[in-house]
Image (cartoon, rainbow, N blue to C red; front, side, top):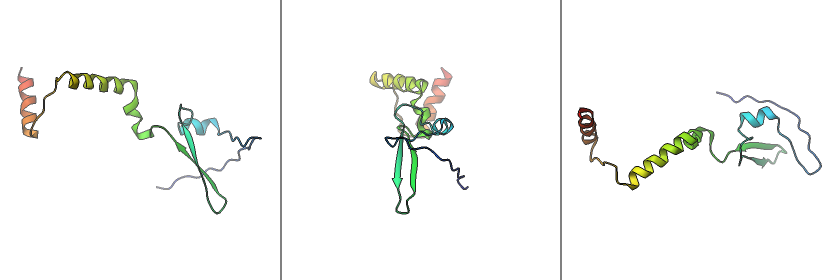
Amino acid sequence: MSASTTSRYLGVQGRGTIALPVDVRRRLHLDEPGAQVEMTERDDGVIELRAALPIPADQRWFWTDRWQEREREVDEHVAAGRVTRHESTEDFLNHLEELEAE
């Protein structure tokens, strides 16, 4: 799989500010709080910009309100001692069968 390349010209404003196009900001999630851009200046004069998100895109599901709500519920169960530990997979499966039979 090869990465596609798109070139655009961006104006550099008085204080060195560069505005990224809206479609790029949205696609790379740079319009979200805490998003940053990593800049690398190469010896050959090329400036590379990379999206640097506070939460990697492939882990965003974990930080959704719904998932975090469920995480808090689990924490409450653990704190209250409402957990069961099993020594083996077989013990765990037997426990599930017992629960199903109830």
